[in-house]
Image (tube, rainbow over all chains, first blue to last red; front, side, top):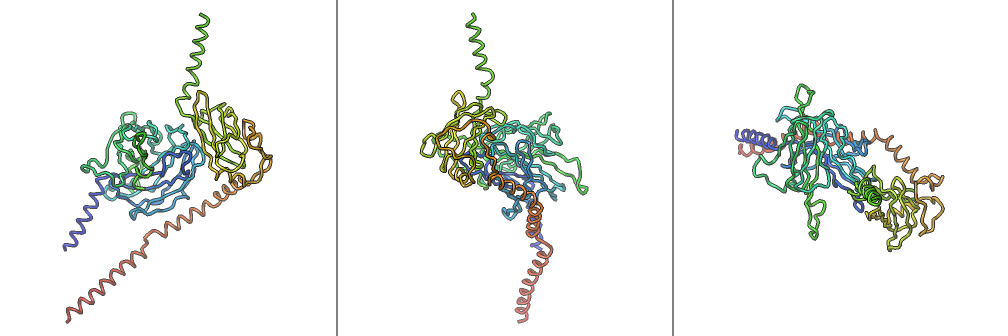
Length: 266
Length: 201
């Protein structure tokens, strides 16, 4: 009898604990800025995760995964390899950058059913990798159904910088949309309480939101939109997600942090 | 008065058009293809560093050649010999950047079949577009590239199939669940057997 109540207790705890943090589609490159003299191979990780809490969900093989460079779209789905992280299914692809340019990696996941919220979740997720000094075109949408178009250059940012973006759904700005913001924590910080885990801002009447990142690391911005379609009679939450890395301002004679130090999860 | 007008014209010409471009740093990218090294000078994709000076040095710091970028910001030269190359680009107003082409890249190029006539090092090569000096012979690199592309395209369904099989293999199927349950039942069965025997005694 005691075992049964313990079982329900654990189950209840798991559900409520998971609910404290938000879901995020994640597309995280090993290096958001490729410069000369560095490795040109970029490993891109795909996850479906609670980034601050560091708890994961299984990510099925995405419906679409690719890279857009100078308006050209390259399908990279066949390059994905499954990778277990904390016993969860995640995916990784390696891509070699050969030319200067902006490389936007994007993913469209399979709809994920979240029993705790009784809805399906589809997060269109992207991140931008800049190569060899090129930076033209970061302000252009790549054409995802739901997308955050940056108003702040989405790379080479200091911790403490502002980040602004405009939310588009089917090509139109979404006024007053809710944007959830989380740090890919990697166990570095403890929140004072559960409110701090997910930061929340809303877009203005033009679909523009603003956030200031208080610490270095990868920050995810997920604009949540009620989908127009239903899947098997259930609601669908559409997410437009962008991942942006902020770095510490380093003093002249200080030892610069190695790439991975800011980014413990990898 | 005339002098003043002239001065004003010159001043406005200086401050207006080119000024904006220099808010950016100048970038330099170089790569080797079929024995030719291509250099690109650019502020961005659409703003190229035109007529910028390009100097090429070997690992010991000896200057091998120099030239100027064309209207597209490009400059190319035959790879002189193996070893690291340091390429320095100087745009007007002293905006400068450099690119280190590692030996691995310059040497892989010299493995390729001979392209144009061997160019003695230290001789400046014509500035301008790539097409001018290109030999009629199709070199190994290009053929390799074409084959890679074709294979990639042809094998796409195979890649997809392989990753699907992989996916299937990693999924926990009904079979695994049933065998797992069976295993648990077996362990408990043995435990109950011994527990029951102990009670009988």
